[in-house]
Image 1 (cartoon, rainbow, N blue to C red):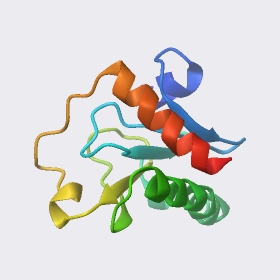
Image 2 (cartoon, rainbow, N blue to C red):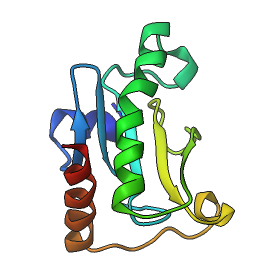
Image 3 (cartoon, rainbow, N blue to C red):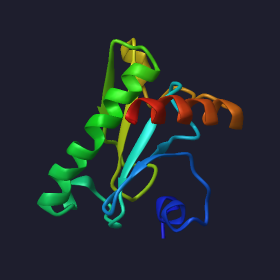
Length: 130
C-alpha cells in the first residue's frame, strides 16, 4: 500500500482539488512551487503506462480543467505536466505552475509550506473549477 492509497482511503489527510469515480487530485504538501497539484488514478497501478487505455486518456481529460484552474489561481506562463514516478510507486501526474524551467526541476529543494498556505492554494484553485 502506497502513501497515495492511504490518502485515497482517508488514512492520511489531503487537500482535495477534485475527484470523480476514477481519479483524485490534491495539493502536493511538499510542492516545487505554490499551486503544485498531484493527479492520481484511484486504481492502484505503479507506472502510468500500465494503466488501461481508457484510464490513460480519461486522466488527461480529468486533469485539463484542473490545469486551467491552476493557471488562473497562480498566474504563470503555463502549467507544466510531469510524470516522474520514482518517489511513490503509484501512477501520478504533477501539474505545476511554471514561470521558469527551474520551477519543474525535481532535483531542487521543495518548498516548506504552512497549513494555511495549503488551504489558501486549495481554495484558490477550487474557486476556478466551479
